[in-house]
Length: 581
Image (cartoon, rainbow, N blue to C red; front, side, top):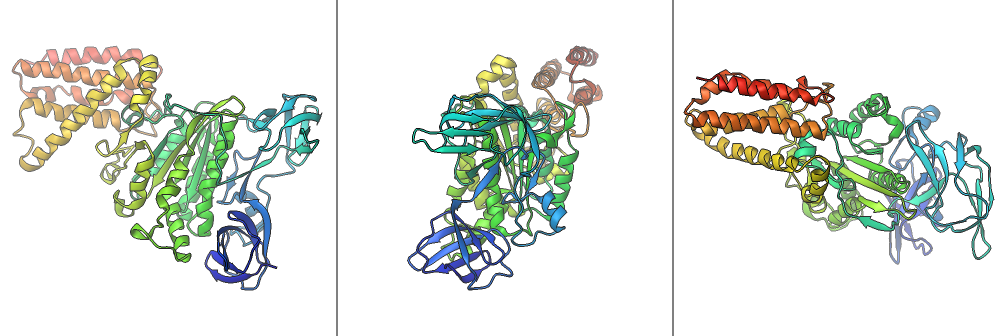
């Protein structure tokens, strides 16, 4: 019998055990706490426990399962809220109350709930891993596609008729070439630290459209791409993720709250339940999976929550859906790695983080991608990882190592956030490496002018940044009029274009077509105003026309479905500036 030898927080040791395997799931002690084998030596087997070990004592039994930690996959994932090891929090609350007691054994999915199944295969068909064999309407928005599990292939020798079944009922029996018969239900399992195989990884050539101008225009992300969102406390990471989840053109949203404060997590989850999907006018939760692991939950489960979330995302990707995964925040995940590493007495690297932090970060972000799946569907997983650097210091290890493995970096700025500039993305620190890959899509679908005007915007903002260094030293009044105009047009870009009101019906989401027209009219104002200055007119006369303020208000005054109104504002610019004497 294997027994607990020592206990060090979530890390326990078993002495002289010879039969464990690395990454094997185990149950520890009388309460059957869930754990995983993470190290094996000639004397000790080290296990990290995903639940509180407060009541555990040396000498209690450790039970092998001979399998890995797996996510349970099937109908019922959407609309649900899980903890880091995929226990349903609503069910636990109903059965146990507010707090999760150690050793709570609740099925991940409601196995008795019935679903209407429509089969797309028949008796005598040959099926293999990944093939879709049945359809279930999981929510009013999402059709769940039942797939053949890994390691199963052969001839269907028995299949149910279309009808209503629960998750435990055998739907299909398959006989392989060795005459072994496998019974399939709606549920399958997948190891959370193993990515699902695919037929082909495709180039990232399609943008994930968010309707947020600063992202879609300046720093776009591709479907299947990865992005980091670093920002200090109060810079709007959660608000930005809400907008992203609500408006991005992904089919499924997976939100992972990893190690954040309990009251903040509660507010976030409650707000997610209240969000309405603007495309269908139904609750957004109907295409969302929520994973909540608060800061007072066991630290090892915080580390597991990231893998649980990405495994669920890959499962829906294999059905042919585009999935957006948001992790808030990967800093707390890295801190969990640091704590466990410290208890394992491993040699620390920078700021106490383990030396393998970069490889763990890369393994997580590498699971993003746009894929041709085993079943010939196409799907993607886009990963957006929020980072909470201490003191908003972007030079700390988690931010710096994440930058190595993502191609999109949205740096949130404390000063912009405090000035109520949403989204508070700093345009001088942020970047996107997807622009070149997406250029053909933009040119084909929006027009070649989109990227050209984008580049002019970036040039004006860069010029403003340079001029502001001079202004800070000697003031704005000493600048020549053409440079004063650059600063004013940059203000129009910042306030009238980059700043966005999430609570205004016309400004919360903006189509790419409207984004292009907004950019074009701002640049038209710049060209006409430059012409006025070349005629010898003073910049102060331009300011008195109030035309800059009128262009800033375009974002509120022109509806998304009536872009013809832009012509009115072109005439307004011509009339206002031609009247200058």
